[in-house]
Length: 321
Picture (tube, rainbow, N blue to C red):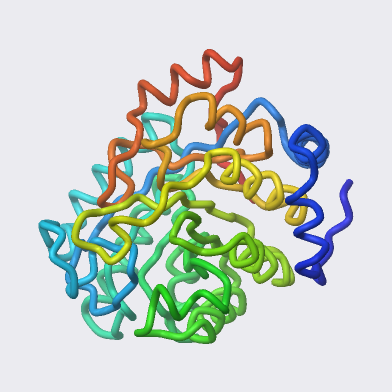
């Protein structure tokens, strides 16, 4: 098995990333096959359980109350609606159900108690439960774990150096602190970032360096391609070269060999060929469904058709990362 390493230098990561493309893909695929099935992909479903009205100023996000994106806001969905969506996700082949709420930080009290009850209910259906609710305190993380939350998503988004260009309402250290609370509580970590926000290659690789410096590595590493939304500060960001995205996936696979590398936002804009290259580069999970929180996502039929053409399949049973 591949040895795990937590002290990657930016120069070492860059040397991997800048290899001739065939060599990079070969190395990534070799690492992938040592740790995972090369023919199976985990299917996760992400539901926005509370949409819009967030006080943060994340430049990519249509859910910020600071931007006029035409997004329809809604308060926390009723439990019955969430349970129904979870059952639908399981029937369609998802093994993980992720619930996202547009909060800067959820407050203790009736709303958080409601979330804990929802987590218990979804976990009872035999799904991996993942939540993304903003920043957490240590005690909140422990209560979520006790309720049955298997994973917590809290992305770093980009490198520490570029972070201030994207967000001013919380610090990089705030994000790292939440990750420490999640890890201390015994939940697994889902943590990645976004490419295509106008960052440099060094910023992209700086993000990977931050992720690979965590010990243990995040069990799940979502790699998002920016979805440009009208009304946000990044609506006119320059387009991303698809092969640069594939290089990010391959490099993530090599330096975090046992992590699930998740193709996340932006798949709707990717060709089938780009997604196939991402699978070849070591991506082994996708978010399924018509929407990813609030942005378009390929439908189940397109995903199933693509995997069938590739001779691949979805993981059928629950995966313990």
